[in-house]
Amino acid sequence: MNSQRRAIIKELLTEKPFISLKELEESFPDVSSMTLRRDIEYFEKQGDAIKVRGGARSMKFITTSMEDSFHQRMNENMTAKERIAKCAIGLIEPGRSLFLDSGTTVLKLATLLPDERHAITTTGPNIALELIKKTQPIVNLVGGMINRENVSISGNQALKFLADINIDLAFVAPSGLSLKDGFTSGNYSECELKHTIVEKARRVIVLMDKSKLNRCLPFTFCKLENVHAIVTDDYLPEDIMSAAEECGIDIIVAR
Image 1: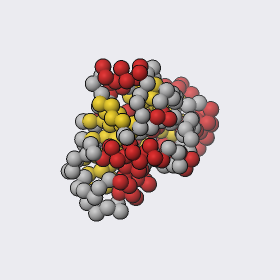
Image 2: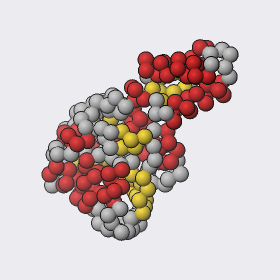
Image 3: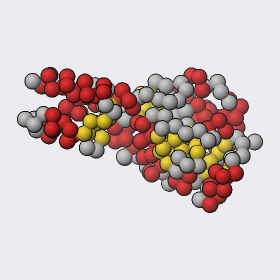
């Protein structure tokens, strides 16, 4: 009966982006809520779902990304990304607790970062590998599920790991920015993690080249008023610039 019930739940996870615990209780009235919660945990361990409040989200829908692959983006706008990274390094003081997001611009930042004493947490395995080439930083790699397209780690395990980490300065890389929808990404799980980082960090700095402007992906992780600075390679459109100034955001154009 246990295997039959889980087979039905797995089928639901292939058909729907979200299954509520209430829905499962109605489908299996003879099964306790505790057992159904254990079923959700089972599918999370199997990589089929992420446990969220009130139920589970299907990984089939979460891992579908609207973004280009990491390897495709790796060779795009490289001059701009290097300028942004060099400019961002000037904002870092030694001895800080840093968070480095995943992404090609942040990878460039990790490569150019001076060998100084920092406590650095990252969701990018490739970024962690770059950082440990240095001798001084303490490097924490968040554990969880790896998104192949972005070479980044997210999911419920990652959120639990971050709960115990203090962040002084967070460098966050969005996939898009629009005045209406704010900073967006194409993957729900990554969006949830970035949102957590923005809430935890004392200071949030966005790194983005002009290709991200007026680009809107499905999931918003924060709005303009939630960040403290934007480092970019060109001047922002007038409407975004005006809104950023009203929020007191430092706009740094890397030249």
